[in-house]
Length: 526
Image 1 (tube, rainbow, N blue to C red):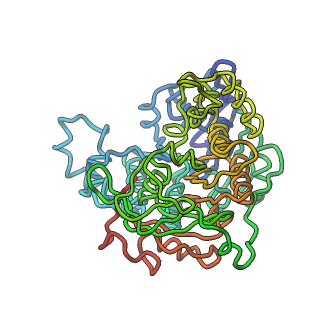
Image 2 (image 1 turned 60 degrees about the horizontal axis):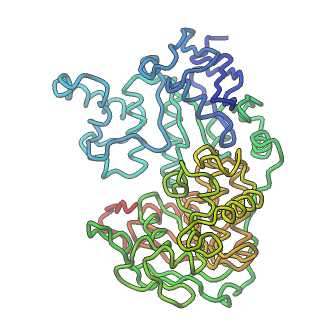
Image 3 (image 1 turned 90 degrees about the horizontal axis):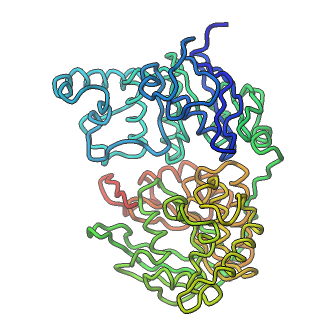
């Protein structure tokens, strides 16, 4: 057997009492795609961070081309040919494509002198691997797919021979994802090796040669992609059979008979700088209905979620809940029974340094059961938190530990439980505004969150599901509308959308996307 380009031997890493990686050994061959699967908290990020030099392993070694890689040195990892494209791109929006690629590759005094040669090298790489680039374009003006291409070329410019892709299609349209897969095929054909991290099992099976599954910090299985399937991989990841819930088809005309809970009538909103974030949105969501909002990140979905949480004011049109106009006051929306599941669970969903119990009660502290004369009723809030943790299967070391100590999946369960309890146990929210509720979650947590949203709809809640996962929208939504450049298409029955039509509308093309920002301009609202 030829020497593998990458070999990890007995990698072990502890954080206090937590064993994040337990004697993991893996190899990667030249021109191979190795998919890395696992639940949130399974140890994938820790393993990749050790490989890239961000963490130092307590035991074990990393070899590149048979030579040991110095631990804890990102510069050494880059020099050895290891590159990484993060899920959240690490680009400076105010700089050009070329400047972003060159950052950190040479001293500043040489930068200007070698610009012409660097530009030629970038264009040669782009042409060789089929990656269309505009070196002089400002990154802030690029689409998400274009930014990802910049990240890939940035890694190739630094001599990457092993490329780590972390959730690479999470924010791409279907067309952009297809373009990425075509690029991957080119890279592999020319000898690049890839570690592919994704929760989308269809993609994993499509692009990978081999699949490694982590669970609880251990390597529990390796499979040839051609000899396994989604059901087996899901069971290996979570240790049990996972049934992914889906929306049962509604009876014909049932939605039309239900009362309208949320009504947007030509609603618009501007940012602090006067820029139009939402432009004349019209939409109705009825009790017991799930309406999905598709779109590429940055086209107004975040602003829509803020509008429906009371943190952004409508500057035109009307926003009504159960027939009553709503003010831009979060307390009024919560008091009316609106459940909010924000997109960014870490920055907006919880206060990481506060205890689990404080986060659980945070949105209802104004209620008499949790405060009196401005003083928090600690015992009542803690009792509520214990009940919520038990009811929503939140796995935590206790309700007194900081919320940041929880895994992403359990943090999302806490947020979801808090939101769905806005009207008290046994009463469904009037409206659920769920923004990217399963983003970055493992398949077990995804199934749990989806089941809870479906349950809320069955109990009579109107659900607005904002998601970039088209499979999720098809599985859960009764109707789907698409956001592009601050505009919203008509909400059509889910079965009336093809994947191609959704992709075109998300990109601002097609009949469903008329009235966008004009001339292909993308409005980055989030």
